[in-house]
Structures are given as C-alpha cells and as structure tokens.
Length: 622
Image 1 (spheres, rainbow, N blue to C red):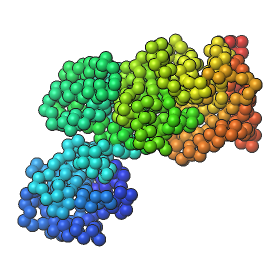
Image 2 (tube, rainbow, N blue to C red):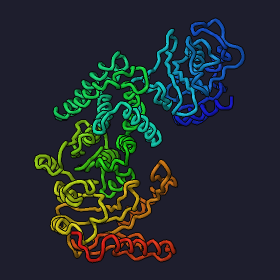
Image 3 (tube, helix red, strand yellow):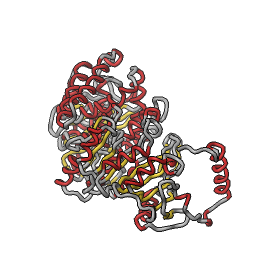
Image 4 (tube, rainbow, N blue to C red):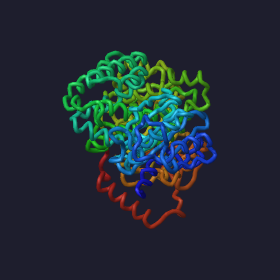
C-alpha cells in the first residue's frame, strides 16, 4: 500500500540509515539480498508471509518471496542482523496470538526472525504508524539457535540507530549524535505529561536530573523494568541517586534534598495510579531519558550540552522562555566561540561561577579532550573543571551532566559564588580560564560584579571570557566597578555580538576577554570586534539556526582577526581605552561604505532616535 512508504521513510530517518552501504554496514530493502547467500537461502525458506501461521510452527514457509522492509548487516559483526517490518497503521501492529504474519508488523517480523535465527542472532523491529507521535514500535532479540526470543522493553515505541541496537543487547552505553528535533519532541511530550499530574515547576529539573543520575547506576539500569510497583521503582530511583552521588563525592545534604523531591513525587496519587507498562508512568520517563537523551550526553566527541538544551526546550512550555526563572541558555556556538577565545586546551583549568546546567563546562571538557591521552583525560575529568550554581534545580542538572560524562568527581559547588568559603576553595585550584554568562538584572549584583568576582578567582595571567549586556561596555554605567576592574585586570578584547543571539530573550550582548591580575595599561590598545553577523537565521519553531552552514567560516574569520589584531573596516578596530570610555567596536571602527544600503542608513537613524527618546541626553545611569 502506498502509504506504507511513509512508515519506511520514518524508519530511515529515525534509524539514520541509507539504502546500500553505510559506514557501519549494509541495508538491504524489500528482501533484495543478492550476494548475501546465507540470508537469501533463509528468506527463500521463509517465503512470503502467510495469512495464518502459529509462531511455533516451522513445518513450512509461506508461498512467494520473502520481502521484509529492511535487512541490516554489520561490518564488525557478521553473526548479528536486524530485520525490520513496517505497517502504515498502528491498528496493524500486532495480533492477539502473534499468528497472522501478513497482516501485522510484530507477527510478520517474528515470522522472519524464526527462520533467520538458524544462522544469525536476530534483532527484530516492528514499526507501525507514519509519524513519531502516533507510531508503535516493538523490538525483539532472537539469539542464534534459541527456541525463545526476548522482548527489548526499554525501546518500546522508540527507534534506535542500528549500532545502538547492538550496544543495547550487549549492555553497552548507547551513543547518538545530537538531534535538536528529537530533544524538542521529547521535551514537549514529557512537559505535557508532568503538567497533567501537577508536578510543580521547582521539582521538574530535579525530577529529570535525578533520573539521569540514577541511570548512571548500572544495577538500577538492569533492574528497574523488572520492578512491579510504582513505589518500588521510586524507592530504587532514590537509592541509585544516593549511591551515585556518594561515589561522586557530592555532599550528603544534596543527595537528601534530591531524594526529598522524589519522596514528594512518590506521594502524588495521579502519578502512582498510572500502570508501569503505560505511557506517562515513571518507567516511561526513565526509558525516554535513558534511550533518547542520555546517549546524546554520552557522545564523547560532542561539545553540545544536550541536557541544557533539553531543559531549555522543556522550560519553554512552562509559559515563557525560562528567563523569568533565571534560565537563559547560552547558544552552543557562542559557548564554543568563547572557549576558543580563551584558548581552552588539555592544560586548561576551567571555572564557571554561574554554571547553570553546565554548558560551558561541557563544551570546555570536549575541547580539552582533543589531543589528550587517556591518563590526561582522566586528570581533566577529576581536577580541571569547576562550577558554582545557586539554584537547586540547575545545580542538580549540572551535577547530572558532569556525572553522566564521567567526570570522576563532580566539582560543582552548590551555593553563592560570592560565598567566601566556596571562593577560598576555588582560588586554591590554580584556575587559568574563567567562562561566564552571569544573571542579567536578576540579583542585587550587577553583571560586571560577577565578572569582577570571576577574575578574582583566576591565577595571574588567567583568561576570563564573559558574555554580558552591551550596557556593561558603555562608559556612563557601572563606573565604580569598571574603575576597580581596570585597576586589577586588563581588558584584552570586546566583541559586539548579534542583537538577537539569545532569541527569543531580548538582550543585546557583547563578549569581553580579560587577563586576570594584570592592571589595565591605557596606553596599550584593546582589540574590538564587530561580530553582528554570525550566519544564523530565525526559523519558525526552531529559533536561530545555522541553516546555510556559514558559522564555521565566520568564527574562523573572527578568531583570525582577534589573534592577529587586524583592523578591517566594518569588522574590527583597536583603541586605547580607560575605564570611563566606551568599550565597543562601534565607537572606534571605520565603516565599510561599500556594504552600506539605504536600509542600513534608515536603521541607524531609527535606532539613534529611539535611544534619545528612551534614555534622554541629560540622564546619567551610573
């Protein structure tokens, strides 16, 4: 039937497969297995799927040709194959007795598997439906020569990439590339389900992070699906959290707090009444996070804070963009740019004193691993990454992030970054790189006071790279803090960033590069970059994305200008500045008139008029 092709397209997209050769193996469509003689002989034996055939009846195959939607083989494992059977409607997913191979996806895939398992260990995947929202998926493992198959319950209604199926049956950690679409779909669905059972906002990040922490306990991963009651699952989640945090050196009071939240959730009668085998049950949340989100966090080469992105998407559906809760996710390409400005490498010792979910630390960790040997990697994890976070929920996300990425000992401090006990410990770590996106107008401290605090914790000559509102770079604001900063530290560079880089949050930011504990010499020039075009464009429901793949080249140009201190009209400048001067490229840069349009002129006039109306020339906002 024509619409079955939609299910096949869904399968190819979710499995990330292409017909024919793939890096890891080969995908044969519609039973066309020419050249794979063993598989071909077994499919001939099976024949076309009969309308009726009990699963334990091996007496004869069906008439015609066997045509499973896909047979998948592996380059590194000649003894394991995947067989996939698709149906266009969930009504055709499986029969009551699994004895109608031609009419139902599960019946059909098990029919093929019972023949194929004579020579192979078979992963059998039945997929019904045409979208991820309405699909049903069941997966089975039928080991070579065995009489009985095993259902892989963890991946009910989830499609994996082929290599992850083999990792799953071997008990290895799943790894997958970052997918914003999958993160967004999972976040929306989980948020809606938690809203239905009336989970309060403050408990949501702790619920998510707590489960991810529990999933770092191997025993819990193996056992949770065998537990028979809501109460026993929740109890085991709490025990696993306690074990993991204890082994990671997290203070016992933090474990107690997280467990207390789960105890509150355990008393939620709406939650407790959902049967464990159903969607929206506690087991469903655990499976979704284990199979969909955690593998992105485990992906060693990724600099993306998948958990941070997940929670940011999750928070959007709480009635806003999260900024009201103090949650403004630093865009991934901005965290990478700032790490590159700081020159993060395997010898760096990095701190973020407002670390949120840990985006800067995740990005820095991945960059530090490049060129590091296994011994150095272990040292990086244990001794070279530090964070401070005040918010309970975000702190829990941050430690989950670092624990899952196997940092050895999660050096995330819970508390105020101005607390003397915490800062004393951080100062003793000889940290040479500080990265920060401080809270914007949400505390009694200005953004530059957070910058000042960060720099005070770094070793002499350490690099502090910060993203702050442009108002911090205007000479009329924060005069006293600016003067203190220049007395102790050197402003090496300032980059004017795109106005909408934090879209949908309305903040015009700039990135500053500081050298710690070296007083600013106003006779030496500071570098200024005009980085208003990062190549990203807005797309409905997706936000700002690099759809034209321009960012990599743009970042390389920005970094080259900075490192060479080149002056290019319209892009960069250098100037000697004092604490009460303007610290923005716009004040010193020469315009590249060849690129100006009438619209540019009109926009400048409009912006200036708006500034006069809003601020007034006579006001001093210090």
